[in-house]
Length: 361
Image 1 (cartoon, rainbow, N blue to C red):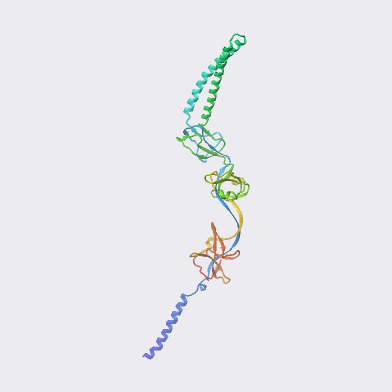
Image 2 (image 1 turned 180 degrees about the horizontal axis):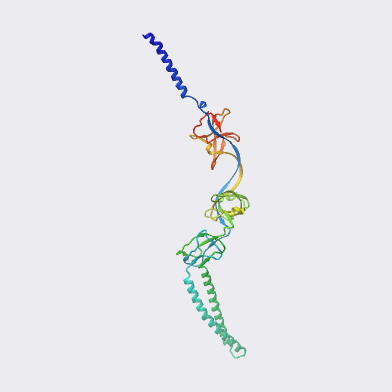
């Protein structure tokens, strides 16, 4: 009985070992024996880029007026708002003028009396002058009436000058558009107190615009008036529009140590799409450099390392480590690890591993 069991036991042991080996072989199948993964290949291409400086900017009108007043008073009406189109002479702000009109009425009343006194004095002056010529009046009488006449004229002239001043003050209680354009700024509302020199509203001509920015003092020396720049305005869907640097301020702001610059766009079609107040960017290009950029979706991250998948001659995935530079939008610069003309896998996903059999779309 024991002798017969030994061969059977040996056969069972052999079968178990074969099964175990078979199972291990199934689990250890390499990725090279799996089905091919379909991928998209792209070719790395070098491109020439321009390095430079970018300054935040805004669209302003070449013809803009900040309107203020010389009188102090309560704002009674502001019939416009920012963005309104106005014509030359349209009323933009009204300021309470009761006291000024009262002054005008008093001056006009005084002028009536002064005019009557001047007329009467002039008659007496002419009469005494004629009598003096006929030797019927003394020189003292002529001197006295001459003095009275000069005083009456001076008084009248002073009242006329005062009336002109009051009329000018009255004109500043009604702020009108100096030219046709749009209201680009509104700084007071009804009931506010208007003060001399403080802006009330601003009007701009939208047909003539410029792009303005401020530049730090350590950057101003690299700029040159008349040089070509590019302007981007995202809200208008414009990128790298050719422009010219037309003005660089000679003196900077002593507090911020910033200098003002201006650029203009010559393309009339583009200008018509711009609106005063839009945010923009002025780019000043300096040096041209050659760089290699690929889609950021091609990058594979393994901890602190970054790489890409390339394809071998036998259509196998090859993980290659790369060193990356700056990212711009969907593209990222590859500094080392990839050369122009080499192919790489675009958007490899998580299913690809080193040695994976690949199928090109």
